[in-house]
Length: 552
Image (cartoon, rainbow, N blue to C red; front, side, top):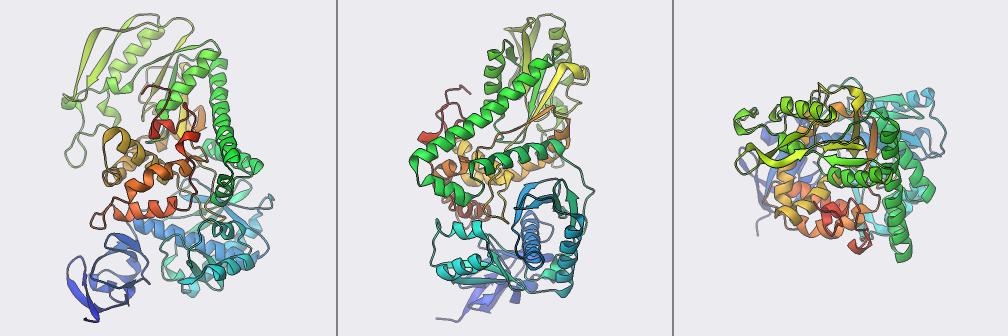
């Protein structure tokens, strides 16, 4: 058998010795070395130090790609963890939420981090970048990994190895510091030139560049309401003793404790929905509630649960569907590819919507439109009429709910705006956070399979388009909200694993979506499972796994 293997690069085929490292031949693609952060090997994302063992297709992952941006940020977090370990060896650095283009960090002692400490960390990180230190991945035995993590006092990372026990464990290594390997990292610190540390609240932000330009930090845009909600959930998690996947897995070993935790998480979320209902009731002028949030944030179930809470305090909600206000195919703007852009605000009949609202608030009866998605046309039915009584308010949910240009003719005092986000407070461990976007994607994969007969690959393939629309039409307006609701439930990924994992395993290496499917599958495998039977019938999670008491 030949000792060489065939490698198919984007523009040529080459023959290389078996067990060659990717970094030894990736420059044959003709791209500058500094722009290559990783590679797709048969559509599996890999670091440049990985070896190839059989015939394969290899495509470079560049610094301006979504995959490259993820590698950069993961590597930057490792750099920070290594710097903190050197300067503050007795302290545990804890990553928190994503805020604009940055990750929030605190120390576990609860004390406010001083600017002088931040300056020391920043100086150390910049020095490590200047030194262009090698970043290695090492495969060690399970027992050796446990010993290393114990010596470094990475408590929660060490606990993960009590629930996931492979004979060999991959660790990242940089200047005497080890951390758990959760995905490819850049081969050396010299690649990590663009970052900053910024004082924020009682901690600081590790600021990173956007996907589009790895050499530029965008001006900071604060998200105070979102940060406040995340902080409240983080405090709640500490109080009940579940802050990492390891602590959740420990709880899953005891069936009684698991059901208690599910019920507590659901109760806490319902309490927050009730709090928002009370805020609405206190503002006597409110006539319409606008609910917005990204895909799979649970808008439909939230609107139904909010409706129940409003009725409990004597307010009757009536629902208007924004989908019925689509203008029709002929009046819908086209995107850059010439296709109808149904995501943009201009796809809606804004004039008719505002006139209907003004008439309803004036006590008039209005005839509401309907929309036929098969013919892409708006139409009217004689029996679809509405009139608001004194104790009735409107509830509308949709991606444009917080955009002031949706309801420009409606005075602000008549509107109450709610933003939804699935912000789990759980971390994988001290240094590795759980992506809110990935959480929502897993929800959507499960829902699309159950209700739309779509494969995981199809859902993943459309996800970039979905998130692009969110960045344009939802995220810029989140600070307009009167209230923010966290729709994540800290037990949900342990439930969703049972439903999502079989779907992800069906994505083939020949498909482009295999890289993301593998990433999500590896992530879900870190969770012990919680059976779907533990999920209450009116939970937001039922919107995705089925079996809800609500009708959708």
